[in-house]
Length: 334
Image 1 (cartoon, rainbow, N blue to C red):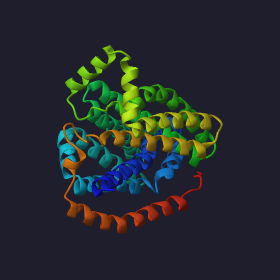
Image 2 (image 1 turned 60 degrees about the vertical axis):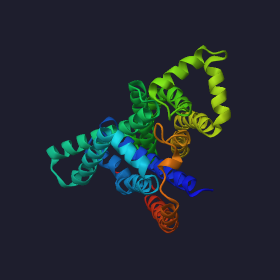
Image 3 (image 1 turned 180 degrees about the vertical axis):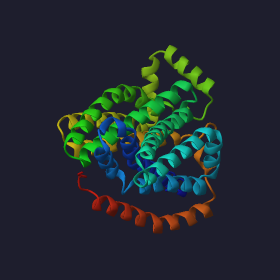
Image 4 (image 1 turned 90 degrees about the horizontal axis):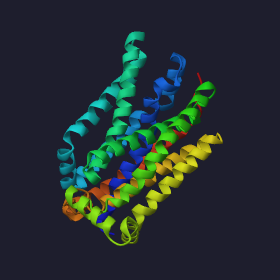
């Protein structure tokens, strides 16, 4: 396997870890005023992510750092092309982080401002990541809005299931009901968004060209079904991952209905993993419009040095994070 392929898989793995782990604490933050009824329950909710939220953000730093080192052209093109939304992501993360850190050190009035910062920072970041990748794939306002709505709804479902898994009593019951409510919004969005990921098979072309090709395919014999079949044959991994993600979401809803929070959380995490696989499986063909992966990559020497660094550092980071989650695995009580 070429080092370009190895490092693309590493970058995709780091983004996947970020979306899975930050996904649930974004959801917890966004749901804070909807699930908690008093200060005790707010503290209980935030205690579920308190030991891990800042460690989860390390995955983003590592993913962006790996992109910078292994794929500098992709990194520079992505950051310059999405400069304003990425700045908004950074501002939202800063507001959220400061609010989480200061909340336990201020008086009641300032605490309400911190709660607002947690909700806004969590919800906005979850929305913006989906919007950025939706726009990257299709370049339209509709895709941007759909991607953002899907990402936010998925984070809220993931977070609600996590709260139900980590708490007890009335808060657990409300979290379960919130998960079912979020799924009612998410499933229709998923039915549109997930098949759209591998359908963006012409990511390297312009928006107008994609529109023309889609119109031509719809008018051709067999229409969209023929195009979908051709896409499945040519690129089976993104299509299989997108289909499996939809099945995982359906399984999550059934499991939360049966109060099997542990398995439901596993299913929501699996749906995020599979959706990210579909996303990066599609971007493999063209990480940016008009740019191939080989053109975006660093030279062989740089990739070789990065490989040795990764072989030493990555297992240590994974072991440490796994140990952290094991230590704080029990339910949080008031």
